[in-house]
View 1 (cartoon, rainbow, N blue to C red):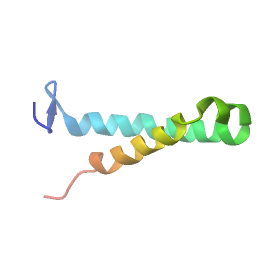
View 2: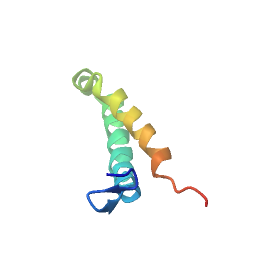
View 3: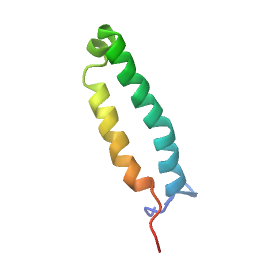
View 4: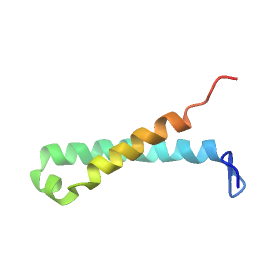
Length: 66
């Protein structure tokens, strides 16, 4: 398995879909924590980890110039 193909699909497309899902999910979780303090206690360490994963997938999914 190479880094450009995962199960026959281009890896770039999979990473783009990770970003499409994770960015709004992180934003909604952050808004929920800001509005409802109980959500901040429930999410605990999940929100910072989620945002770090989102941050890591953004540069991976951006196309590189040839």
